[in-house]
Amino acid sequence: MLIVENLTKRFGQSTAVDAANFTVEKPALIGIIGRSGAGKSTLLRIMNRMTDTTEGRILFEGRDVLSLTGAEKRGWQSDCAMIFQQFNLVPRMDVVSNVLHGTLSKRSTLATMFNLYPTEDVHKAIDILDRLGIAENAAKRAEALSGGQQQRVAIARALMQDPKIILADEPIASLDPMNAQVVMDALRRIHEEDGRMVVANLHTLDTARRYCDRIIGMRAGRIVFDGTPEQLTAGVARDIYGADASFNEGATSTAIDQPIAVPA
Amino acid sequence: MQTLLGDGPRPVADIRSDYLGAMRRKRIYGGILLALFVALMVGGFDLADSRNAGGFWSGLHRIFDFPGEVLGEAAEKIALLPAHLVTYLPALIETINIAAAATLTGALFAILLSLLATRGLAKWPRLIPVFRRVMDIMRAVPEIVIALVLIFVLGGGPVPAMIAIAFHTAGALGKLFSEVNENADIKPVDGLASVGATWSQRMWLGVIPQVSPNYVSYALLRFEINIRASAILGFVGAGGIGYELKNAMSWGQGKYDEAAAIFILLFLSIVLVDQLSSVVRHKLTEGRAA
Image 1 (cartoon, each protein chain N blue to C red):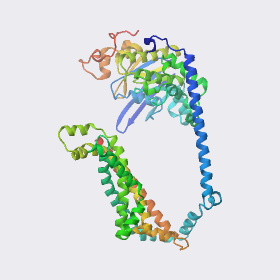
Image 2 (cartoon, each protein chain N blue to C red):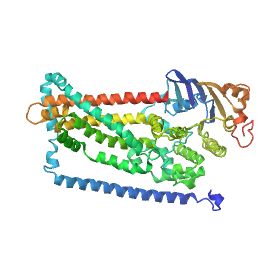
Image 3 (tube, rainbow over the protein chains, first blue to last red):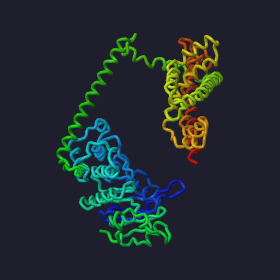
Image 4 (cartoon, each protein chain N blue to C red):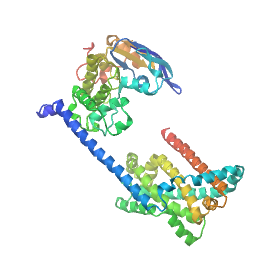
């Protein structure tokens, strides 16, 4: 389904992503872990075509998505939704409008300026908000919502695109533990109920272990681990983060209850 | 929240119809505003056109006659162009000199005025409105009026032009600088106040380093505008390239090739300032990051 081949991104002298290779056969919830600067965000941005690659290919259903341009590239971007750490909503616009932005790749600029969206799209947007439990806030400005609610609006925008893949760049790094759980549960549900592929950069190991089907570990741009949550032992985690024996993931865990070893 | 307060969540159908209703209302308001805007533009144009001495439509096709004539004549005498460029270079330098001196003096006054007129930074907060009105006056008086008065008093030459432009520049830049100051981070200023620094020390060390890249870019934009202003003041006797342009542009003298040369010189000097601006700004922001 998705094949990443020899993907490399260099910024001047430094290499952000170094010959990354992986293959995904069927939709899964994939977590990418690694310390800051390991190239996780760059990898996602390349997949969404927000950043261009230096070398390598990404094949999705047999098509090289990195060679697309113009309307075809925008078409790919609408198939491949992105969720950001800081939500990246338009703060002064209402929640439904923000969700409707998910259809922008199919709308003309003029229709957008006059806020002309089809009624069925508005209905669909409100239904998606209802599914995520925030339909009550439909008419509020995005900036008036809490962080967890804003992230759910961002997920609703992603769902509005009806994407095949959802990329989530540190979706819970700005949220408190309770909201983080709500957002991760939502991503898990989207994967299970809709069968969409979700690729999420995560900064906490317990989240990755609990929610993901597969975990990819990156260190200094290279993929150094690719396996199931069970295979991600404390020793492997130390290698990924380049930490010594004093490293204890429990020390900064954000889980409300005790971390569990096996995913639910 | 709703469930905590006791009433159940509203059904989705309600939310849908409420939102669509609000959206329809907004669209109607937007449509009315757009229709009003178009009506005013059309109506205003008709009124303005009826007051025109000649008539807009009858004169429209002649808009390119003058530029065409200038370019035509310049093209005929293209061989003379390099010589003209050299001839008028000293006049251009005089014009740029007037603009540079005026921008520099004006900007220095503008910095002082802007700091005195910014809430949170002002030395005498109660006098902020006074300094704001002073800057308004400086902007309101056209520089050509000041120049004409000063030329009458001091006689023709570059000094009256310089003063006139500097006066206007201080008001215009003061407003822009004060908006930049408002966005400056107040924390370093507080830090300096805590060690007992005077107002001028706090401004010099706490504010100026933060805002200088923006100051420079506004000042260089103003420099561009002032080059043009100083060229215009040449028309009323301030010397420089404006005087030469006035002579060359007068109709029927067959000097359009010289006018074209002067336009090229003005264009080149604007390009130069623009390039200079990006280089200086880049250096300032880079220096700040390092």
